[in-house]
Image 1 (cartoon, rainbow over the protein chains, first blue to last red):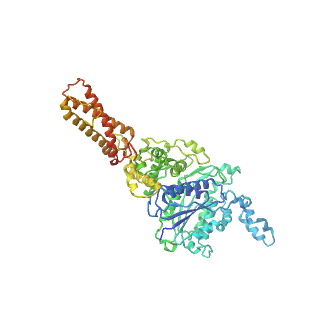
Image 2: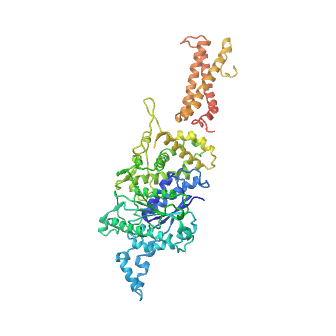
Image 3: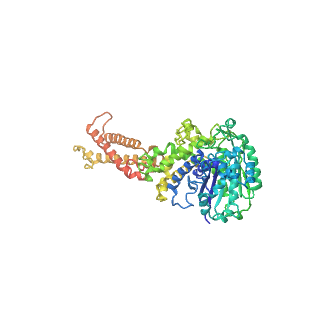
Length: 511
Length: 128
């Protein structure tokens, strides 16, 4: 049987940010046991900055993936950068603007009619006046009780129907949500109940009902400026995150644990401090190590009981996972990551990105360079779309992701690489459009110390200085790449970069 | 051999020149150019990319030219003409310069042959 597709429901701002970190992991070439990933973004706040960032990075990823791997068989080039197919995100947009407030949405005023007084009383009991009058355009602002009513409309949407029509027998579903906010906390139980409803009238309802479903629930890992809440400038109060989490966990324990097959919990007591925005384009929180760990749970889920096609095939009906690091450190680097494949891929990918940002354009404009000529690259290859897409991914998305993960506002920073190669960090942090390319400067010496705490092997001695030479390595293997007869220049270039970087890392690092 | 060195006015009054002068110079020319281009393409061109630039290729052509110049003037002067150091024989200088110019041309031609056996200098001095 072919490998399963993964329908990945990313709910709310956290969902989109986890998706962004997942895209980085997939770009690093980490192997996934899936035919393709189909992200399904659920957010009532259609202008959410995190969602926009997520859309852009996946589009860039796809431009690269499609140029290299279109028509390539699934088993080929596994483990290479950008290998896993991610479909453009499907957005289950239920624009809060269309609904106005919760009151408008449920037709609260019509409950004045005779015979509805008990319904109205129940509604008043469940929802405060603030809840009822809250505009829905910026999400549910930490009110899952509101979200649970509004999100019901997701299931009625055309995109959701498309998903049910496309769903095949051995496909899997994974849901990313935060437990302490509004949209995620409401969306996860709602989706689980829809998927596991045995009386469901959905298309392929039987397949969906029997599918292996996993989820990651992100526990509190950041706090927002409480003053803004106290002053009435924002409706989000992070001092209630823990209480809400406890309540939600108790609910999950009672009602969801028998529905979900693999449940991952991630969170952090060392919290990040974010500005307090009520959603919208300004809600653009920086990437965080916890989101990366949540993204790794998706990879773990794809390997979870990989021979099982439906929930009946699973050895254990439900399993629960947590993520931990051995040392409680404020700065996490590659030494703290125990998954060797993840460590290796991140290391390879970083050296690849350094080449793309600092060396590749010069190489492509060097008319005498052996590897470029062996691959018969045109003189203007550096101006063509493929190189531009690679450069954009590296300078606009990858380095920005690294900067964000290492920000001081995180009490636990993820700093796997030496960020001092980035020379315009201040400009990047001020750039609200997120389109400004990161500028880097790497000298010969720096190439040996790119990885925090793990220097590369340097064979310099009194008589000879050692260098890491990308183009020399690429030129050595260029003929072998040509001999593969791919018939696709982009695939050749990319395979060469992959294998060349792999050789360099094998020479220089013992992981 | 006289035809090969057509640019040079023959030293007809020197029998020894016709017999061995041309041949010795030709051997110096071919051997030196072969060795220098082999070092450039087959040795350095397969070890490191450091030398794979037009500048380095030209430097090696100059090394070849200088070697041919020095060897020609020394060997021809001492072994063939029995000259002593400091003795000036203008025709020998002219001949040596011609042999050196030939060495550049031969180095260029040998480059076209050897470059295919190199890894890093495969597209030097020309791309085809």
